[in-house]
Every structure is written in C-alpha cells, then in structure tokens.
Image (cartoon, rainbow, N blue to C red; front, side, top):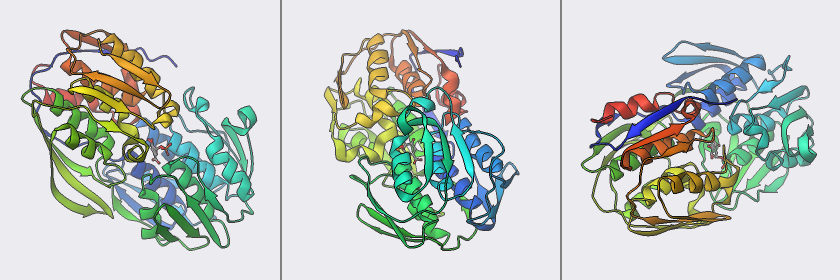
Length: 434
Ligand code: S3P
C-alpha cells in the first residue's frame, strides 16, 4: 500500500504546555489477549485505539471473543483457557509484530487451524524466532521461507514444556513462549540475554498465572485458571519520548507529559537523556494497575552532549533509537550506538532508514551493522524525507524538522496511525509557530 499523505513542518519556536500521551501499545495488546483467555468479563479503561491494537481486537473477535467497545472502556468476555474457536478466515495482523508473535504462542496451545498474515512490512519480519520454539514445544507450524515468514499456518495443542534460551532479548518472543506455557502440563522456562519489557509477567501474575521470575529467567506452570482483569492502561512512554526529545532540542521549551508509564524495562531513554544533559524531572510517581506511572517535566537546557550506548542498554529503549538518532544531531560530539542489530528487523530497517533520511537533512552519520555514529551538533537544513512506512521514523523525522532551518516535507505520515493517531494534533497544541 502506498502512503501518499505528506506533511510540511518548519523550524519551531518554543514548545510549551501539557500533554497526555496515547495509551501504552504493549499493554493494550496484552490486555485484550490475556482477557480473552481469562474466565469472566474484563474491564479495560484507556485502551489504545490505533491501527496495531485494532488488529489485535479484530483477531480476538475472529477467535470468537465478544469485545464490547464502550468508548471510555472496553469489556472483554473471556472464555477461559480453552474457549477460543477456530477462526473462519485468515487473521490479518496488519503491521503489528506484537499481534502476530503473541498469537503464534497462544494459538500453538489450540488444537485447531489458524493462519496469521500481515502487511508488506510484517511479512518481511523474522518469525522463526517464535515458530522454532513453538515447534520444539510440539505445535505443527508451517510458514513461508522455510518456516521463517508469514503467512503462518498453525495447528496447535498437545504442547510439552521446555527450558528455552532465546538468542534475542525480545518481549514478543518471551511472551509467545509464556502464552504457550499456559497450555502445558508442568513448567516452561524462557531465558533471555538481557531483560526485555516485563508487562506480560506483571499482567499474567496479576490475573492468577503461576509464574516466577528470577533474574533473566521466567518460568510458568500451565493450567492455572486466569481471572478477569480490571485495569487502566497508562500512557505510552515510547510515544512520550518524541516530546521529551522535542523539548530538549527546541530552544525555550517546557513540556509536561502526564500519565506516562515508567516501567524500568521501558525507560532506558530517560537514563540516556540525563547522561546527555537534558532537563528531565520525574514527578508524582505512582502505581496504576501494577505498572509504575509518573509525570515527566521536560525543559530545554541549551546543552546536550553525545553519548555511547551498548547492547545491555538496548532492550529498555529498543523503540527509542530513531528519536535518539535525532537528538544526537543536536548533541556535542559523536554519539555511538552499538549492539542494536535488532533495529534492522523492526517495522523498517531503522539503522539504514535513519542513516539515509538524516543525511538528507545534512547530518553526518556513519552506519554500522549494529548501530550508527552521529556527529553533532548540526544546523540541519529542511529537505524532503520519507517515513518508509514506519510510524516511529515518521514521528522522529517530524521532530527533527522542528530543529531544521526552513521547511521539511515528511512523506508517508499516515504511518503515525499505527501507534499515535493524534500525533500532529498534539504537536500543534505545543507549538507556537506551526
Ligand atoms: C514489543 C516488544 C518489542 C518492541 C515492540 C513491542 C512488545 O519488540 O520493539 O514495539 O509489545 O512486546 P521485540 O520483542 O521484537 O524486541
């Protein structure tokens, strides 16, 4: 599908005001999937309504779950672990890797046939990382390219537990295995090289799963009955990140971002930005439905320094590298990003794409297989840049445009609807010169 929506942005005056980011995408997906296999009606407030989470909502409906969208909240009539029905058609996961990988795990526990597909981007993304452990557990799975790419055809059931060491730190892989583990008699263990986001562990434990975490090892014992949930989804840190960066780059800015999820497995960018010298204050920390939440006050400090990041820091800021690359253009020195090879298999190849597009704005970037070097600070010059159909690239380039001289045209901006449909409205509210 070609995306011909473009937007023109100019260099911005100070960004000022308060915003509330959209609800967390990871927690929204999980809440619908887990509630579907819980016993009873779950109530989910502040669910993200964006293309990715609508893919999950449609998928759960196709599996026979009644989801009543009341606007303020949704009610999911869970049917218990064994209540899903065989879907009548192929399930389209759209652009959403989380939908496809978590459902591969869940459906591996079900003895019926399901077929998962997705858009051009999703059908290029590696699925062997979930297919291979599911086959080891006993599911029958076929997929394109030697069981590597969607469409994925699953006939599950009869799973056996295993102790799996994942070669990648991926919350989607970890979650797929834990979901399959719900359907195993006995224990299933997953180990990861670095800690990835832990929403699945928190949420499954809260509704009654028999799950234990020890460092980088998570073990689930199957068969426990899951109870319904009543949750309020916090704001998405990964969406807030664009405005944290914007306020740090645009002179005179002060932005208060309210109700942001600050789970430490997600907030690596806060540590990095503090190291760079950005003005971030974490205020009013509280617990909402088992997740830490805070308000973040972001002020322009006038001086950003380059940083170096390595593999151990990658999982907690995996989705924030495109915006970190933009921030680095305004930092003094060479920012070195390494150990981030995973960025090449996201919604786009984010290393190649950010290198290509930032160069168009006049930035000196060196590309590496697992990262990039970015020299700053640069007086960027407005140009025509492309989103490559990637929501986070579209938003990152839009923030770069605010610091570039003249006009920047960003092509393909409907991609923002994947995670943040109101992005340009929110930006407009904060900007005095847009
Ligand atoms: C997600 C996990 C991450 C992240 C993605 C959402 C999740 O992917 O990049 O946007 O909700 O579990 P990986 O598991 O591939 O690292």
